[in-house]
Length: 160
Image (cartoon, rainbow, N blue to C red; front, top):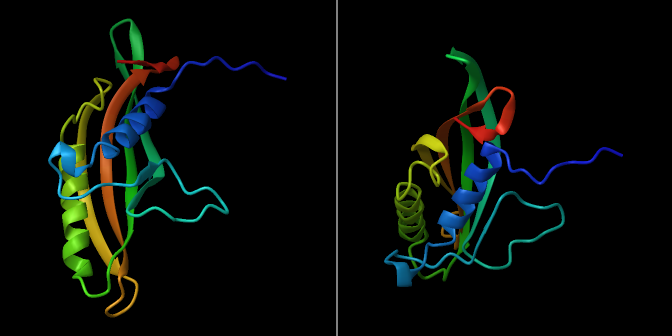
């Protein structure tokens, strides 16, 4: 059985930072809403109970090998989505509520575009709001984001 070191890849550090950042979305921190949970993906069999819940999923890496000086590095653009799952009182405006959640997530992502110092930039690429049914209190908002970072070509745990 192989033995794995506890070293964290730069990709994992980025994802962990995004999750931690999303958990700061509270009214006490100056946001419009309080987030109940932020998770790196939806676990099979797990149900969305606490709302609103943010799921960070669909992580795709585009890699380019770069040569600079004595050490080669890999330039990575990580593209992912944050799904916002929320339900509210049917008498309220679901679209307005989700737009405020989208605003909170975008604002939180922009608080530290370096993702704790390991990324070159973070940007929101697109947002989408899908109401589950006409006049339904449930909706899913999707925010697509990109994070660019570099790591040593020989060691993905070593940021460049």
